[in-house]
Length: 280
Image (tube, rainbow, N blue to C red; front, top):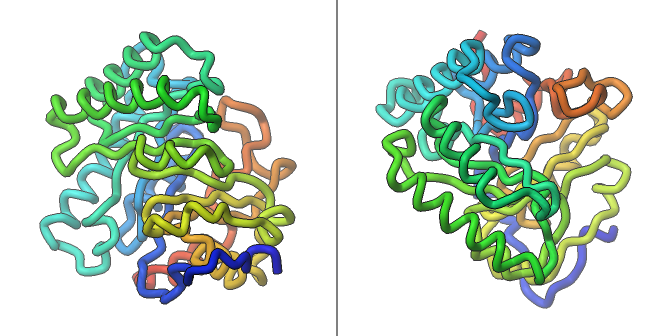
């Protein structure tokens, strides 16, 4: 199969690494209260979840988003204190990230920094998800400047007490230089029909699985094991797989068919496969 591309070195396929969820686009908490409640549920192996109010932080604090952010923050604090043994993954991750839309490099630097400060002031986010991030070499210096500034904001903010986290949403394999510009790169975002035949860039073999994330929609329940095998083989430590498609997913303000706006119908099953069993 194409994803079994030889690089001359062994991939990180021991299975010892703990997969976890990166949730890239749940709908607004008012529209998806059950989804946000599930993300705060003990035993959910959550690496991070993205908060997006209105293509950014909005113009004022949103009470529904404040509540959702508080729940996730409290769940992480409990996990860090060791109050729930099922939440070992959340204790080492479990972050809330504010979404910043780079619009493929066309968004003004000042606007992005202003949005980041609003996320920190209002929602006490733990980091940022840089959506629609450029992937080419010419844009690398600009992205490095932005991530350096965001890292400084996070360091100065009391909200990121456990260390800030930056994720670049390329949705494809970017120039290798981006791997040093942030904590994680999203190197695949798309349909299962493409993912199951995808190939990994050879340069990623030099990095641990925690540096890469994959988001795949349209994954049938019967192919979950195969999808997780591909993720591990390609070195992705953070995943979000869903059976939703662009035709069946509800809207979230960025289009009426975002497959990542809600949780998959097999959510409990995939949680039990990669994390502790859910307690009823």
